[in-house]
Amino acid sequence: MAEKTIYFSPKLGAILFWVFLFVTVLANFIISVILVPIMLVMSGFYLYGSVMFIGFCFGFLLYSILVSIEKLETKHHILMGLFIPAIALINVLIFTKLSNDLIDFLGLNTPKHNPLSLAAAYAVAFVLPYLIGHMIKFRKKKPE
Image (cartoon, rainbow, N blue to C red; front, side, top):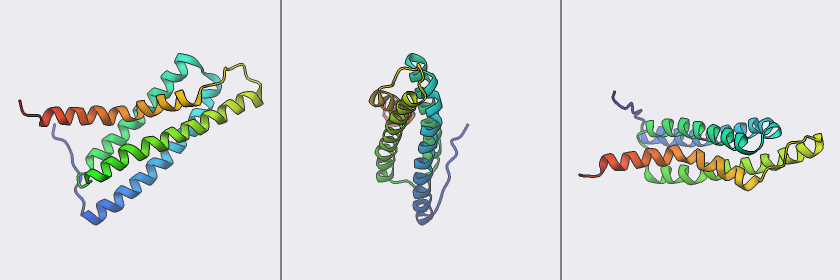
């Protein structure tokens, strides 16, 4: 099965990149909001597993879209590789703190979560499809 590539003019490709970047930041925000109820009722392995699964799925979706846009330059890939995970990390960090405050406010028995470790778990899972994809591309290009 051939890999599908979408070709755009350079100007349209740049516009598409910035729109994609904005939509990705917005989607990360929405995912962080969706994680709050999960953080209110889950803890430990189940919470980290759920957060990492969501991060991996979202990262895979974004990577799939990103590689289908052919005209992106290396600087765009670097920006996406650094900026989006940083935004994801910050969003999950903020919303983990919010869920901890809600746990206190609502008097729930759920233990408080470590914002840094939960945000790091999400960010690592989010970046993993991108890293795996680049490793596969590198191995295919590497001469035997």
